Every structure is written in structure tokens, then in C-alpha cells.
Length: 122
Image (cartoon, rainbow, N blue to C red; front, side, top):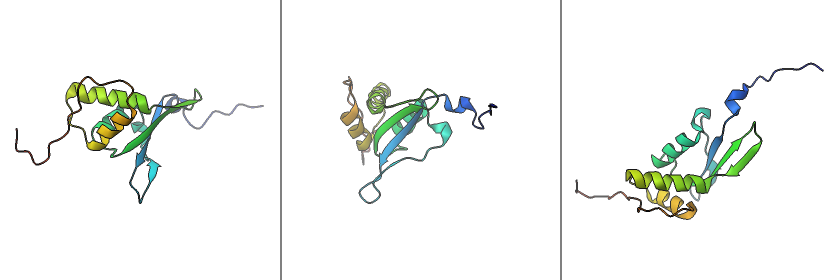
């Protein structure tokens, strides 16, 4: 039997890919966010959640198609988000605060900062 090379470059798939399940509200429901292939790495997902690109993340899964595995990464991501927000004193949205409180497995030494609305303080 002849060997036919794959038309999909394997180096594009031989990496961990992170996808985010987001809650779009009662009318729209939950869906896996459509994401550009280049934005499915761990660092980009962390940065996008911290910056508010995902309003209500519910679940994060990671998989590697070449290695043939997948797992729930929600707790790992929540732990890292909590640590990064605490280390950098990043103001977190109520949705991010709820995501971390619901899913983090490690206690955070510092309370996440919440933005002050209508404050004139500098």
C-alpha cells in the first residue's frame, strides 16, 4: 500500500489547544467560542479572559489531537487567573471574580481588585 502524506501540517496540530465554553445569557445559552487557531494557546486564553474578551467563561478544555488526549483545564486556568490578578493588582469584573471563586482550587493570598464605578479617586 502506498503512503500518502497528510495535507494538514502536523506541527500545527502537535500542541495543546484550549477552548472556552462561555455563557451568553438566558436567551442565547452557552457555546464554545469560535476562536482563531492562533489564539488557542494557554497564554492567549489567559490574557483574553483577564482583559474581558470572555464575559462569562464557564469551562475550559485542553486537548492535543496528535497525542490523543483531552482534559478539563478549568481549575488550572482559574488558579492561574487568580494568581495573575493578585500579583498585578488587576481589577477584575464580577464575572471573572465568580469564575475564580467557583473554580479555583488554591486559595489566593490577595483579594482580587474590583473596579470602582463612579469613583473620583485617583
